Length: 587
Image (cartoon, rainbow, N blue to C red; front, side, top):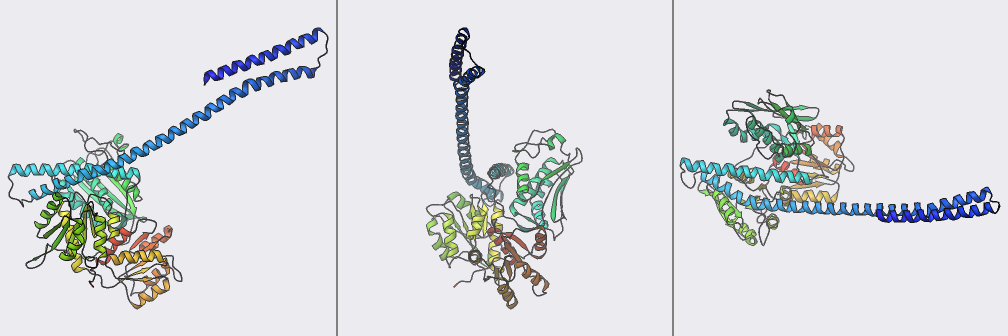
């Protein structure tokens, strides 16, 4: 490139010099022979010389430089496109690797943790002190590995923007109780006091799984870094339409230099006198989960005076508490509850079977997925556990078959799988969705909820769906009927008003933008009437709400769901809390 410009420049300069010399000689000849040359001729010569320089020097050089810059920019754009494609390809390979890693690690890890739990329960005989210690090490190592896998997968989902949230109205006191109950044994090992403080009527709008993950991570960190005999407090306060949640400890505090980097990925806090611990992803994930739900995680800490992590989330309506009837593995004297296990992996099948039979259930297995529907219809179990990754018939297909067939539609289905898509499972009719590895207590709790609710909490009155859009109304009605609820529908506000006046429904799912009488007017009327003041109302709307409208709805409706978000799973879960899981009547 430089050589080409140099050659053209010298050639053009040489040509311009030749023109100048010729013009000079001509001018000398005219002067010697006293041929008059006027000023115009002189100017014309100068112009000719300048024109020659422009044509033979400037323009060629500019053309070459411009062509070079265009080619250079095109090469840069091509390189950027290639880099983008390579980055996307690398990201795709990373996702495939993480998915494969999840499958390949979670499946054997489920067996390791499950069978170690069975050994620890002494169901297979007494263990001596050394054996108990070894089993404890196996369980501890397995749980640590599980946390590493979960952290890496969560971090990957957050980075890729694929973290799914399903927000609903939750009791803060209940969340605190679950978290403290799970972590209290950990604190007791260090003689620590773990307390929680929240009014029973405080409710927060959040994803139930992720809010527990946030608090569990913060409390576990507080336990880890607070010395023996310390204190960890959970507290919640309502202010300005928000719930402020705090996790406070009286530990050594966090130095200012570490506070600046504490939320960075892979940064690990140093315990005094110890090396670094953990992956350094816990607080990064926690901060991101808070942000995804509309809050910000903040740290306040002074060296020697402990630390306080806090965040604020939207306040919600008071959660309707519902009494749940549970089962202990028996139906009546001499008769045990029957559970059908649909699983093609022999190890996992044996594990689930052992966990259920050791707790008093009668377990039946189905290792041929294509025969699952007929076996369930013939056996009529009290509940079914279902894996999703099976061949030749996938668990998704079996779930659809079970919920569409009148013989099996009322049987609760508990999905037990490595596939982390609970929202899809809820949409297709799964009653519970557990992601492997699943410990024994979690599995038994899910089974007890399904059997207890099937027996004791059938909905008597129908649910009223008030929606003017035909397609949306049909989707809601079909979703609820598939779950076994009795449903009535109204296409406008006047019809809804008349139906509620004639017969009080168990619950109303209310759109706001309705013809004739809008949702706000209906809500005001029903709340002003003593007959309907306690009627549970779920608002499901596409309207962009102002802060004033949000405040009004939070005070008068049990739940607010937006159609532009993923609302199906949240709707079903909150319905189950409000009116229970119905039993479908057999034909």
